[in-house]
Image (cartoon, rainbow over all chains, first blue to last red):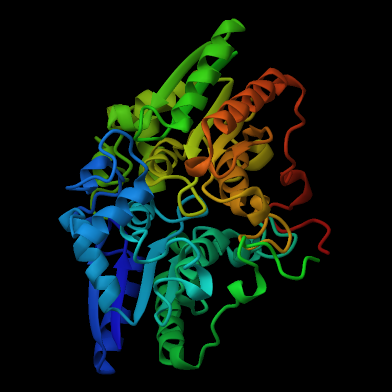
Length: 235
Length: 235
């Protein structure tokens, strides 16, 4: 397998960095190829602007997704976007490794999605979900949380983790056709002991060793929707 | 009222920009004070780094939220963060005006949350939800979507809009104690006619005129959770 790890943490000695390194080492040890997009180390620019396009379909009025499609077709995407898009094309599995900030990705990673999940390649028109442009590839979240395990679930103070992750797992990953493997989640990370960190790393190692057996999460199939994307069998 | 509009769109002639200007003009016309944080125009930096803190609680190992708390106490937050935090302190109502990108905020606005919702002021420890640091202030989303109205809802292809917005409305806004007013949502915006745009702007005008009558959304009350944030009456 070709594995891309997209990593977003500003502290090289962080637990997130340790999870990133563990995955890279373990997967390389299994004979896989691994590339890491270390967004902080790269100084990745997360802000989508007109500068992302060397040529324009409409130079007067910026509709970002339409210009993505145009520039992808022309081969005129900004160089830093093209590098990351080529990594996506190369990868069989993409691991997103990050701390949850405000129930979502840190801005530097959200901007990687905004700029690199290029319309015209990753999705477009009805090429979404199980007809998405990245169909055949897999993805997985590896995340840390400040909150404790009992703060997530039905009736818990922060609600269900699956709901919190739905915009990412469904709205970003499944949307472009990626098969989404179950996430690895480490709770309460800023506050746990060294022994608990080691225990979490061992759990992550087991998660990765069993990766090929993990059943993918379930998301919509366009087979269940008509040409206007209305449900074929409305409830 | 003092109203802060946080606006994130790179196209000055966009529909989002028109909604921002309509709100500013209408609210000023009603005698309110309005300040706009135009994130693209300001060149706002959305990436949380060690540079955000002129002094450090721990110079060797960066835990962002702990350094926020420290630097807020010392008055040594980066100048661009302090400007935005002062606007939050000043505001009675914050309107977040943006296009939905990938089921969430554009990275430039997500980074405004990451950097400006400062631990030690906006929240901290158990000062969250109805005990959050911004209690007494209100917030509202004004968003545009590429998808059509029938693509959101129970059984719809993209799921329920409330679920899509939960990480923002609950995880960011209600979390810091903001009273969250019902969002204004414009669908299918890149593809609609000029007449439909005018119709949406009129709907937004009515939404704003009725703002003081809109019932706030409901979120957890810490009264229902114990000191460890476990539900007092588990289901």
